[in-house]
Image (tube, rainbow, N blue to C red):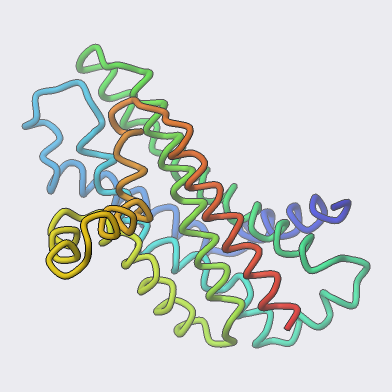
Length: 240
């Protein structure tokens, strides 16, 4: 894995050489804050909490992370630079991990840049900082899982639009599985045990405990396992 760091540096710095990255950051921050204030009614809650802010992250990531991840491999394949990349002394695994970590670091930076929301809560009241830190941890882990799925779909096609649509569809299913209405629909024609099992594959199911300050190892394992599996399929797709 000696070539992961050079790939990481190349990709991560590449984000900030393009104005698209800054546009993404501005859109993400405005959307995240706007949803909390205008849809989540941040001030009307009357609580020193960021729950109304983090509750929208699964839905926000549903569109913004596919937009950020659709170019990971689609652009390389479309321009033919993917063939050039693999003529270098680097394995497919190193390339996948390096590009993924760079994109995840960029998305993590976007999430961390929302820290003024935490400062606002701290100024207005006496929040539970443990809950806030746990929520940030869960959001970053969930963003990593979204991104791994998007990286996989990007490796399956040369077209960025197709990659975006596939990513949204897959991630939408993984969000809906934890939605109560969708769970009840599954229970109407599936055995209860199977419906509960499918619900456990939802982003929402494993993200909600973080927003309440509960850091359950099973939730961390879920996000890391989903990420690892998607990256494994990413490597297989590129090698074939």
